[in-house]
Image 1 (cartoon, rainbow, N blue to C red):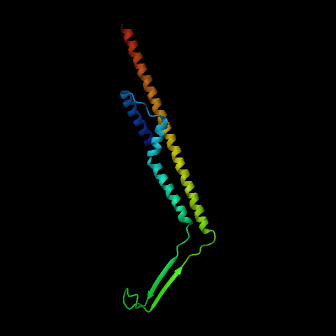
Image 2: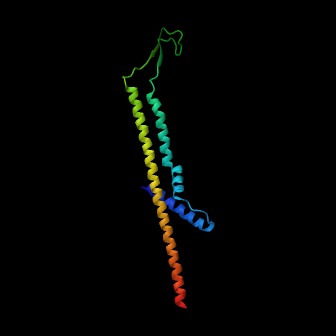
Length: 166
């Protein structure tokens, strides 16, 4: 809940600061598309989710890989520690794990589905962030409109006061 409140609050305070600065310098205001672009490109949750998705893509090849060949060496009955030459018994072996048919393809399929799910999570985060930015943007526009109406009402009230005094 704190994250949801922080983003619109930060965007509103940023926009008010920009609106105040723009009134003095007559620069153009940020558009909705620019606000969304800034938020999507710099949001840490989205950047983290994209990195997680990229990591899941790398895990697909790893899941589809064949198990490695295992080479073992065993030396028993050594006369001294680490004296492999004079040992009476030595064993050198190679082993390879043969998996149940279809297990490797199934692991790869599961990894691909996990990657697709993480990609959908990234898309969902982007949509949620775009919604929050739009909501905050239109709240700023509403506040700006209300401020202009209040300033206009103040001008009219002062004008009416001056006319009524004379």
